[in-house]
Every structure is written in structure tokens, then in C-alpha cells.
Amino acid sequence: ENTMEKSLFEQMSGEYIQQGIIFAQPKTTQGRKQSHWYLGTIHRRYLKQHRTVLYYNLLTCGKLNSHLADIDEQAEAMFLWLVKQLADKQDITEQLKADNQMAWIGNINNICNSAREVVNKNLIHLSGNLE
Image 1 (cartoon, rainbow, N blue to C red):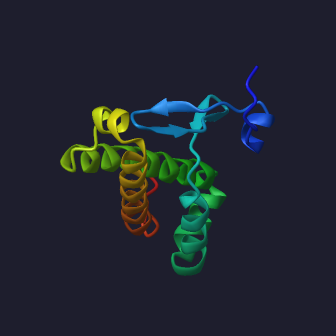
Image 2: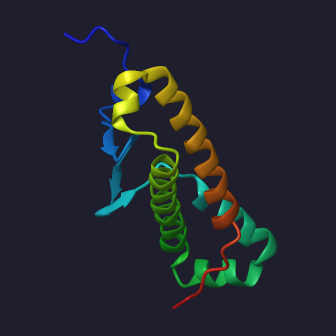
């Protein structure tokens, strides 16, 4: 029996899957994988405040939620790609994880923070299109 305390996500029957060197929390809605990113929400706020016509066009033609889900998917894909690239470049390997787990965790955390910052900066202000 596992004596470790479960996270709220796990208590609610969620399960983590490994994607490369990080773990993600997959969910599905209407057959589409929903990422754990929140950029769709931030992007929606950006569109509503700064790209009002586009926001209402997407909303009235029923494409807003799909557009925001696409932003989240792009965010997750870009994040995973960046983490892998940065880890490879900095030689953060499974061997380092085996030899010095604390150093590996520190390095991966730094890489994840850097990747998240790049993703946030690059995807919030996407203008999107109706094609």
C-alpha cells in the first residue's frame, strides 16, 4: 500500500502521465486532450481587451473555445519541445538523475521555469485567424 499522501488531482481519480522528463495531467473533453496550461484563459482576456472584433467574431461563430484550446495545445507542445532541447543542450540526462537526483531536480526546475516563461511570452498575444 502506498503511504505517500495523494495530491488533490490524484484523489479526484486523475492520473499523471510521463511526457519525456516531466509529468503532465491529461484530461479529455469531447475527445480532445485538454492540457494543464492556462494560456487559453489569458489569451481570451487579451483578445477581449485588445482584439475585440476578433474576440466577438470567434465567439459568435462558435470558434472561440476551439481557438483557446488550440492555444493551450500549442503551449504544451512548445513547452515539452523547449524542455527537451534545453535539457539536451545542458546535458541534463537520466544518468545525472541516477547519480545526483537533487542536482537533476534543480536543473529541470530551472529549465521548466525558463521554458514556461518563453511559452507564456510567445503565445499570449497570438492574433489567431478564422481559417
